[in-house]
Length: 113
Image (cartoon, rainbow, N blue to C red; front, side):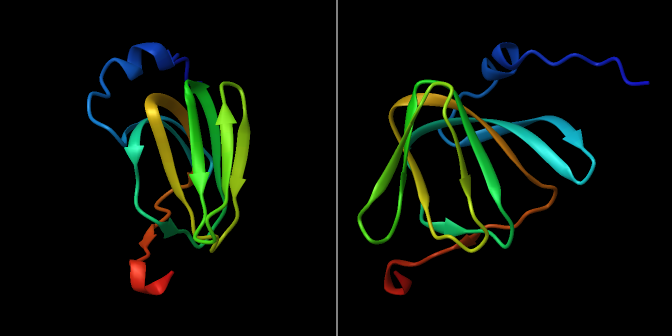
């Protein structure tokens, strides 16, 4: 029986750079990450769904058509498989991400949008 307890606030102190992440836990074939968002990430997509939960701050998920979804503390959103998106946080935020282990990201170039 695993009795390891992880405190996300302690882990957050180790995330110094924008869009860095740390593994919080593995759950079967899935992985929970804590990520620090600050600035604008690149457009990308994944072959499987990816869950975002904002723990601190707020983020925007942008889509190539110019629309966005705003997520505030406590909000959850799921990027569906193959959905092109990018994340953005103007003031910085902490986000719990839950996705399949080894899930690759395919970066989307501007010409492909």
